[in-house]
Amino acid sequence: MYKTEVRGLLIEGDKSLGQITKDIVKPIDAKTPLWWYITLFISLSMFGFGIYCKYITVSVGIGTWGLNNSIGWGWAIINFVWWIGIGHAGTAFSIFLLILRQKWRTAINRAAEAMTVVAVMCAGLFPLLHMGRVWLFFYVLPYPNTRGPLWVNFNSPLFWDFVAISAYLLISASFWYFGMVPDFATIRDTTKSKIKKAVYGFFSFGWVGSSKEWLRYEALSFVLGGIAAVLVVSVHSIVSTDFAVSVEPGWHTTIFPPYFVVGAIFSGFAMVLTLVTIMRVMYKMNDFVTDSHIDAVARILVFISLIMGTAYVTEIFMAWYSGSEYEIYTFFHNRIFGIHAFQFWAMFISNAIVPQLFWFKKVRRKLWMVFVISIIINVGMWFERFNIVVTSLSRDYLPANWATYSPTWVELGFFVGTLGLFITGVLLFFRYIPMIAISEIKSVSKFNKPRKDYLKHTGHE
Amino acid sequence: MSKQRIVSVFNDEDKLVEAFEKIKAAGFKPEEVYTPYPIHEILEGMGKKTRITHAAFFYGLFGALAVLGFLYYAAVVSWPLNFGGKPFNSFPSFIVVTIVATILIVTLLTLFTFSARAKVFPGKKAELIHDRATDDKFVMVFTKDDLGKNLESLNKILKENGVEEVLEK
Image 1 (cartoon, rainbow over the protein chains, first blue to last red):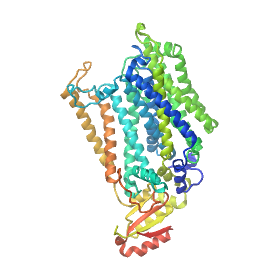
Image 2: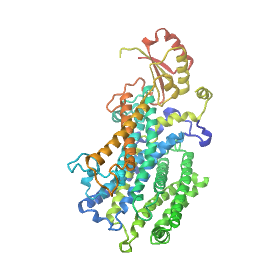
Image 3: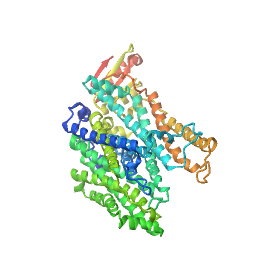
Image 4: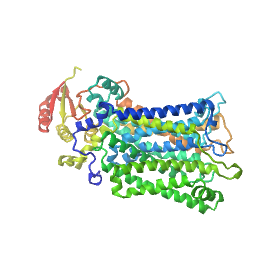
C-alpha cells in the first residue's frame, strides 16, 4: 500500500473535507482578478491574429507559407508535433500514475488533463489547414461516397494519424469530463449563486454520490485508465511513423516510435510543471500542490531527460555505425556541425543537459528555477521537432534539390494564434472549473493522518 | 416520496465504516450510502457488483472485429486499389487503425453504459438526500419499512459510533 513517508504530506495544513472544497472552489466563487482579464485580453488578441493568419492561409493558399518543393513540411508540422507532445502529459499523468497507484497525482491530474484537451485542439488545427483546401477535409473520413466508393488508404500513416488524433481528442476530453462530474455536483451543492447552481447542476448530470454511482464510476475509470494507457503510447508512435516510414535520411529509423513517445511525455510533463507553478503562484494552491509534488515531477523529468539524451546519442551512433553516407551527412554535416548546428545544440542542451540540474534538491525546491527549466525544456522540445522536420528535408539525396526554409509571418501568426488559444483555454479552466480534482484529493486526505481505527480496517481486507 | 426514510449523517469516514460494519453484522443493510468520495469498504459491503469491466471487454472484442472487418471490406471487397504492389488485405498495417479505433469504441460505449447503469446523464435532476453529502458529510439512508424490528438496534449502533445527526424524511 501507499506509504506517506516516501512522499511527505499530500495535503498541507490539516484541512477538513469542507475546507478542501472551499479552498479549491474559491477561484470560481471569488471576484475575477484583474490579471486574469489582462491575460485573457492578450491571449484573445493572439488568438484573433491567428484566425486572421488562418484566413490568409485559406483564402490565398499554402503559398503564403515559407514552404518549397524540398521542404514541404515546415512550422505547421513542427508545431503540430510539438502541441500533440504537450497534449500527452494529461493522459500520461493521470493514467500511468493511476496504474502505478501514485496518490500524489490527485493534485495535478485535473490541470494536466485540461491542458491535454486544449493542446490537442491546437495540434489538430495544423494538419487541417496544411491540407490547403480545408473544406474538403472530410475526404479523409472513410465513408461510403459517390466517388466509387473510393476509400482512403488504410496503409498510410497520415490516415493513421487522423484516426489517432481524433480518437485521442475524444477520449481525453471524455475522460477529463467524467472526472469532473462529482466535482460539479460538489459546486452545485455548495454554491450560493442560483446561476451557478443551475449551470453546474446541469453539467453534474444529476450526480449524488451514492454507492451505486461510485461503484460504477470506479469501474469506469479502471477501464478508461487501462485502455487509454495503450492509446497514449500508440498516438505518438503513429505520429512518428509519419516520418519513420519515409526514406528520408534522419527519419528512416526504428528508434522513432519510443523516441517520440518519450519526447512527448517529456514536453508534456514540462508543460504540466509550468502550469502547476502558475497555479501555485497565482491561486496559492501551495497546500495541495506542495513542494514535494513539484519535487516528484522534477525527478521524473531528470529520468526522462536521461532517456532523451540516450536517444539523441543512439541516433548519432547509429548514423555513424550504419556507414550510410546520407545518414552520416545528415547527422554530422547538417545537424551537429552544419547549417542547423544552432537548432541541434539548442535541442541537445535544453533537453539532455539543462534538466540534469534537477538532480540537485536546491534547484528542485526553488520555484522560479523549476519554472525557468520547464520553459527551457518546452523550447528545447520545439527545437527537436524543428531539427527532425527541417534538417532532414533541407539536404537529402540530390544536391540539386537542396533548399533552406524560413517561416513567413503567416506561419508565425498561426503559431501565435494557437498559443493564444492554449492560454485562453487554460485561463477559462482556472476560472470556471475546479483546478484540482476535489473528490480525488479528498479520498487521499486520510493518508495524511493514519489513525489507529483506520489501520484496523485496512488490516482485515 | 411516501417511503419513510431514516437518514444518518456522519462526520468522517472511519465512523461511517465502523457503523456500517456493525450494522451489517447485526443482519441488516442501509438502503444507500452517499459519500463525497468512493470508500471501498462501503462499495464492497453494499454487495452490489458491476459488470462494466466485462461489458468493456466485449465491446473491445466486437469493436476490433468490426473495425478489421470494415477495413477488409473497404480495401479488398468494395474497391481494391493497388498501393505499390502491396496485397489488398495488408493485415499488419490494418492493425494500427484497429487498435486506435477499438480504443475509441470501448471508451465511448463504456461511457454510455456507465451513464445508463449509474443513471448519470445530461438533464437529470439530482435527488439529494442530504445537501452536504457531496461536500463533507457521509450519509447512510435506511428505509423504515425494511427495518421493522431492527429500528431500535439501529439507533443504538448509530449512537455508539458517533453519528452526528439522525433525520427522518
